[in-house]
Each structure stands twice: as structure tokens, then as C-alpha cells.
Length: 536
Ligand code: NAD
Image 1 (cartoon, protein in one colour):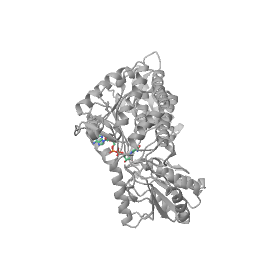
Image 2 (cartoon, rainbow, N blue to C red; image 1 turned 180 degrees about the vertical axis):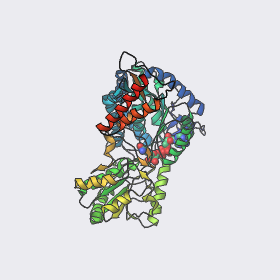
Image 3 (tube, rainbow, N blue to C red; image 1 turned 135 degrees about the vertical axis):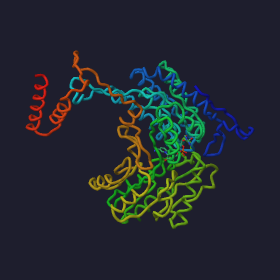
Image 4 (cartoon, rainbow, N blue to C red; image 1 turned 120 degrees about the vertical axis):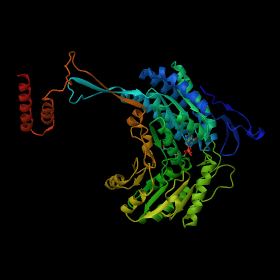
């Protein structure tokens, strides 16, 4: 296994660190956490080769053994939740409540689903043999080899566990390239899979969490891997697709979003407000499926704005502790704070109205951008179509469902979407027209928690799916097998070509595929006469 160990040092007291080390600090107070080794290209190659060796044994494991390994991982998360939440909070700046529900709970939910359903979706499956009645057909879901998962920083633990579960259940080895922004906590999570694999007698090289910057990720893309799951930004998604072309490696792209949440005039406003707050301020909006654009019907615009701002403007922000001292913590990445700040400033300059927040929180030492509401946002503002990935709720006014749908579909993204209405018919009708990988009626992003539903996007939000049956089978070679049905041979005859072979083939094709009994009988007669002529 490669060296991903953490060097516990006070960065302030050290020499300038080597570029091969990632300096880690707590975004909620700026305190140094340590340094983590960034892997070079040759170290990445070595990690992949050791994963291949480990995968040979793992590919032969029974479903019972795979379930046991996943169960050990799940048990570890439950038994060590407090310690894991400490790591997550220190490295990401998020609250303890979000670390528990957004990371531990969500990861357990995925593991449980795989343990319960994985075998059912991966067992070999009999299918019809169609015209070949003397044969039997089946599909086998075989492992691919080594799967590379390149993940972002917004959910340090969940991104890792969610990415590895499905490929592992399908018999693959997995290399996860964690984000450099949360390298400190990521390097601690290696123990979770090590103990699980070793308990069942498998090599810990079967799952490896590696750290590094973009060049480490790029080296992984070029290495001897058989599938890539990329979760991250559109720009880097493009780079990965380009890199994957060299060895023709298939990719799943889980990219950004600009999700709309439509509030109809008949909506239950409490529900709409709750959904908008959850969709924007959970994890400070650092969610791919954040409901960044709240599209509100004119008739309830004022009431919605009043109600949502009453709660949002009173949210408490600061360094998180376990006693619920704050509602929201710090943002993980200073770069992301700068992006949010730039987009908000541009929108204000173009006429957006600040209801709360609207500027970096300078009173706190760390990466703090406060929960922000901008009203009267118009489509000419960059913030209305570019991903914010931060705590900014944009409120846009419409006067009809048609206008709401057109606005919702007007960006390059298509990840998630929501509609809030008391009318089921109207909800379904609007959902049907939203260009997105998912629509949640009367809630925000909850589709993600239903593991039977596929998760992924359309347009710039990516392609391929995580979760559910298809998300699991995505890590398999769906191998078609055709075998003999009977213990005796049906003599084949292809060569040499005979004088009447073409006529026989034509009569057979017409008999098999024409409609109506009379037609079929006509061609059958032709076939019989050709056969008699040939034999007689
Ligand atoms: P990012 O694209 O900057 O980085 C993601 C990962 O890619 C990191 O591990 C990074 O080191 C690596 N990387 C960077 N350059 C690379 C290269 N050239 N080759 C290979 N790997 C490279 O994204 P981020 O800032 O970490 O995360 C935020 C983005 O992720 C947002 O756009 C967000 O919407 C998206 N996201 C999507 C989902 C989803 O499921 N659709 C989930 C979470 C986040």
C-alpha cells in the first residue's frame, strides 16, 4: 500500500514544506492540522499495480465475503462515529450535525443498501435466447479490475465511502483520489477499509485512498485502470474525459449543478421555506444538489421572501462544537469563498437585492461566508447560471408555470430539481418538463437518500449514474454467455454456399418476420418446396 500517512506537525514552526506535501488546516479557525504526502505519478502507478494484485483474490470472493467486508466498514462507522465526526469537522469546517447526518448516516445508508441488495443485482441472470431456441442465454456481471474514483472535498468521508461501496461489491479493487482540500481527514479513513478487508483475509491494497493535487488525479486517469468515477467540477471533468480517451477507459461523470426549486402559488409555504433553507444552507450550500435557484410565483413571492428570510437571517455562524452552538460552520475551501464573493458582488452591482449576508464575514477568523439571500435576481446576472457552491439563495420571480419551467431549464446544468405545490397533477406535469437527472416533488434533494433511485445528471451535470441497480452494474463487465440447451448437436452448415441458399435464406427471413398467418404459411410452403427440390 502507498504512503498516505499524516505527519502531525505545527506548520507555522516548520521550514517551507516540500511540494510533495499537502499542508492541511482547519477552515473554521486557520489552525494547522498537519501535512499529507501527495503521490507522484510513479507512486500512483505502483498503487494501481498493487491494487491489481489484490483484486485477483477479491474477484474470487463470494457475495457473503463481500457483504461481510461492507458490514465491517459499516460497523466501524457506527462504532467510531464521534472520532470520525471530529476529523470531518476539523478538516472541513462543517457542523457536527452535518458530519453525522450528511456523512456517517448517508454512508451507512449506501452500505446497508449494497449489503441487502447487491447480490440480487449482480447474480448472473438468465435471459431469453430469442431465435436460437437450441441455446440458452445469460448475463454475467463480472468485475472490471481496478476502479479509480476521483472525488471532491464537500463530504470528506461520504464521498469516499459512497464511491468505493459499489465497485467493491462488484468485485473490483478501488483507488480513491481524495481532494487535497481534505487530505488530512481522508488519510485517516484508510484504516476503515484496512480493518474490514483484513478481518476477512483480503489484502488492504484492495482499497487505497491516495492523496495529491490535480496532477496525482491526472496520473491516476492515465494509469492501468478499467473505470473512472469522477465527482467534481465541469472543467476538470472535461480534462478527465480527455485523459480517459488514451486507454479507452469508461467514465461516470458526476459534475456540478444549478438546481431550480419552483414554488407554485398553491404551495404549502412552510414546506417551501423548509425546502429552500435545506437546499441552500445544509453544509453551507456546498452540495452538488443545492437548490441554488428558488423560482417563486409572483402571488406568493413577498410572503415566501418574508418567511424564508426570518429564519435565514437569524442563522448563527461560527466554529462548530458538538453542543449545537452554531447553525452553520465555515466553508471548506478559501478558493470557493472567493468564487462566492465574486458572484455575489457582480449580482449586487447588477441590481440584486441583499436580504441577508452578502459579504465575507470578516468578524470570524477562517473561511466564513454567511448564509445569504439575494432577491430580484435576473437571468443577466452570472450568479443566475453559474454554480455558486456556497450559501447563497437566489430568489427569482415568475408569473406562470411555463415561465418557471423555461427559467428552470435555462442553464447548462441538469442535476436535480424540485417543485413545491399542493396539486399532485401540477407537480407531476412540471416535473415531467424539467431537464434534470431527478425531480423531487414537495422536497429538496431527497432523491439522493433513496438508494433504489439512480443518481446523476444531464447536460453539463454529467452522465452515467451512481446508486441503485444501474449504479452498481456500472462497475461490471456485463458479459453475455450463450450455451447449449440440449445434450445433442444441431449440425451447422455455412460453407460451401449452395445454389439455392439465397432463396432458402430469403424464404426463411420472410416466414419469420412477416405479419399474419397467411403470409407466414405462404413462405413456409416456399421453404418446403425449395427443400424438396434440393433433396429430390
Ligand atoms: P474539482 O474538480 O476541483 O476537484 C475534484 C477532484 O478532482 C479533486 O480530487 C481534484 O484534486 C481532482 N482533480 C483536479 N484536477 C484534476 C485533473 N486534471 N485530473 C484528475 N483529477 C483532477 O472539484 P471540487 O472543487 O473538489 O468540488 C466541487 C465541484 O464538485 C462542484 O462543481 C460540485 O458541483 C461538484 N460535485 C458534484 C457532485 C455530484 O455528484 N454531481 C458531488 C459533489 C460535488
